[in-house]
Length: 113
Length: 115
Image 1 (cartoon, one colour):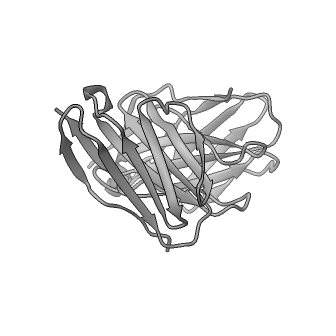
Image 2 (image 1 turned 90 degrees about the horizontal axis):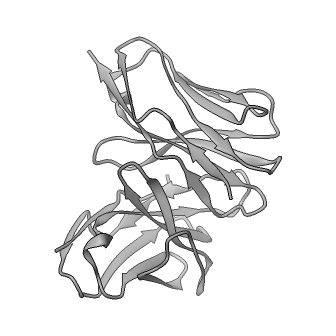
Image 3 (image 1 turned 120 degrees about the horizontal axis):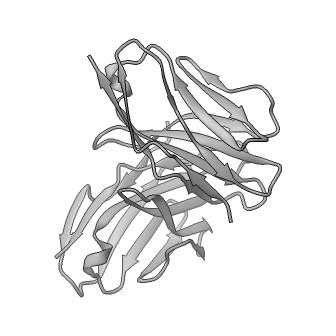
């Protein structure tokens, strides 16, 4: 089974802090994704990476950056956290084959105070 | 841009009965994938079922089946013999075969199962 692991289930940070969310997958997937999940809005794509050191903006990249130095790890960075970034963050990965779905981590519930 | 609409924020079903969750989408593409994902409370999101648009036959996975109406751009999920463990948030999602990396999600439907 595919395992996508997010480093924290719950995280509390302060406004203005630099925040790192880490995601690791163990199945050698090329694609990795970061979403945020908000009530009534579903999941919205922040960034994705189609391979090491490759990244592409999703639908809501403002205020975020990402890093993918190794294939198995994809980091989401909040450069200067703000209260409107309080949300559930989900990481996913996928094998690049047309019929393959995305596999999700457990999520990180981030609160910015 | 593609959009996915789930018009039912919440649904309830009695244990052992059948429930249908609605999903419509908007696209100009002819080939794509559709998915239903399940997210139990405080647990990981998992894939329930998928459908390739070029396949006419509706996908089925045990008690879960879909009614895929391509012309109407409709993709509903039917859960038969509902169980307490089916209680979750269900998301409908679209993936293009042209821009194959991105999933577009609906807002989700909370399913409650009553015993």
